[in-house]
Length: 474
Image (tube, rainbow, N blue to C red; front, side, top):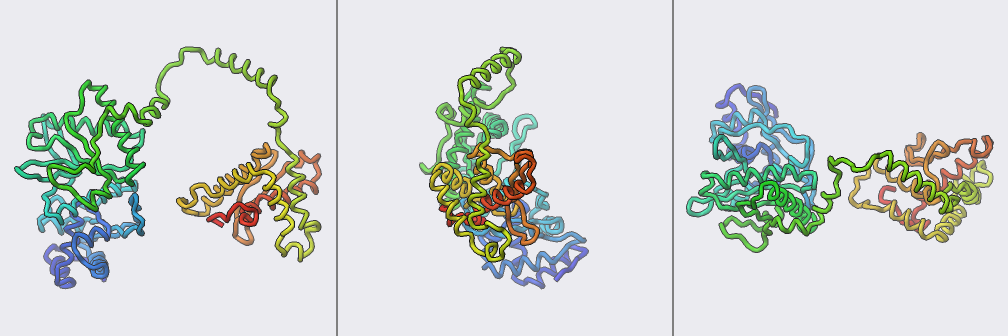
């Protein structure tokens, strides 16, 4: 059903007629928090069963006010760290829904703005989860509201939680951090430092609670190290320690067992700038290139490097660094063991057991090559989405690993690459050899191209028979 209404009164009457239990109000009130929510959050907040919620969402999606929809479904889902379930559908508040919420006691409700960055959407959804949890726990919370202090200064924390005796504490939700974000983190810490030093912070705890949306363990530890590094840099810049306590907890742990009181448990980790001196993150940042000027002329370095090159050539045996074109003989020996004529139908149609046997025996005699190929084929494959481009990319890595073992890299002399077969539409390997390598013999060039292409494709097609293990993408 799709219907547009010219006024708020007609709109609300139509919604009440379609949903006499007023469930539409509960859904819109959740979307009023930040203009976005996924179906799990909507269920948690409203208590509706999934079927009841989805029917209500379908109905509300069909209504519009003065030509603007009330809500719409986001055309993508967001995978949250550590969540093993299928990501839920996401709905956002549209202009019509924001207008409808204003007279219902939500004057600041606004339509959700366009966000292309999945991290930004994940951050906002995390804020919504904290807000819903606080309301369900009977905790007074304000989300994304500004705090004015000093002379025209503003702090916009993710959450402000009411404590006993009219006091408050601030909660910030953070995503995974990298060394590239240290400048932004320093700026955030400086804003909190300035607010904490102001008169307006008198009724606030000298503490900021940080909920980190990463997996507990290594990811959490690394993000904390980044923040501690930023704390140390800010401390060195200002000559002052932070005037507030910063404590952190993985968001997952907080959502499963929230803490709203002034005193928190030992689960929380207090961040300490001094710990940054022991962090590998600081050493990593020290190694990052910076705008420093060299003390020696590049021309002098060129002379030194030239001398080193000459010494390397005089002392090293360079023959073993040359391409081993004997690979062509090896490939034809393996390939033609089963395809001696290449024209007989029964040879072409049969499984090339002899060729597979010879290639397997060759890999058995070269365990380093087998290990290298195995690593290239299976690296991180459980986390890769095997799109066509990713499969071709991974095949290319394996092909280059095989060739590099024989001192060969794809070049104008020889090209080997993964491709899509025009007839079967399946994956294949193509090989192109410059005939100058073979004294201009076109027939021999074609023969070697066929053999090399088969050997390289066999690394995938017969990977299990070769002892390499079947690739996930094959």
